Image (tube, rainbow, N blue to C red):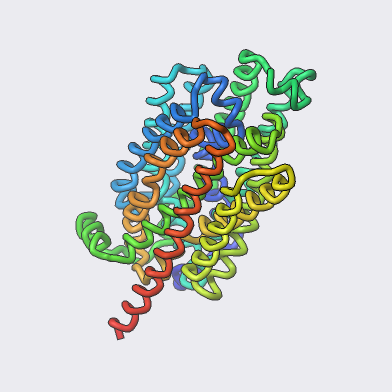
Length: 435
């Protein structure tokens, strides 16, 4: 797994590097996403937001993030991952100091737009490139699988502690489902503020870990320097059809992943769980992420990432088709199983979709630029998914709204499966043309 066989690898340092990337790679998104994902009903009430309004706020994050992906790629190909990632974490944590003040909608919108820059510009492509180089030539699947699986374990562990803190801060009389549904607005605000402070502290701590754990620069992981301008690198990748196909695969997979953000709301509205039980359900589902991502990583190194991704998209489509059916009392257990199975398959795809960069045969020195371009297209759901989903879920009746939501998600899963098939076909014909 040494990317440059002429450079000896300190095995302990090698694994510490991956551990730091895993922790940083998840904690940086905790403030923008974890709180609203794991505590959705409480978050909406505490900030006096509707699903549509929260979706519009997330859209602003998506716009600034999309603009940041593009320049972030060339930056990652030229500067130290240690410096880029540490600065990104510190600036993201600073936003937590604003969020804990419970700002109004306008300030909240500006804050999420700010996070779109801090979590992407200096961070995303640097993490992708560092992970690809960590995996070398023969372990791309497991490198990205361990990264996303580890990120999932960090997310689940951090969320479980946050849920525990949340429950402790609730009044004793609110621990029953019926009482919790009538929990006062002030108590919800107090509880969510403590959760925000908790995640802000974790983000600052992750910045310190990154600074001390990552190498001073990425030279020991990189290939010999290549004399290519940023313009030339971008132009070459724009002309590569495989980059655009991979971006479309990420679009479909990321929409399915964003769909998990509302599983807690589904459990609260349709499965009739309390707020704390819904949060615990979503947090527990997050423990499937390391299982799905790591297992997919091992499979991807055996049978190629695209084949594993296609199978997972098919499984997701079946699960969402089932969840879009009318609900009955006997349906509840089946619904929980399908929620878990769909989450497992979504996490599997997330774990390996950036391994497609290596499968396409792209040179290592252009990884950051390619990751930036794939991300510009692939993460556009940050702009459009939440506003659309919010408006669907705000409709009446509630159960019908959730059914329509899963029909939409099913469409993305089917689209992802078809695009993956086309990607495999194009890659095969490309290999034949290169003979």
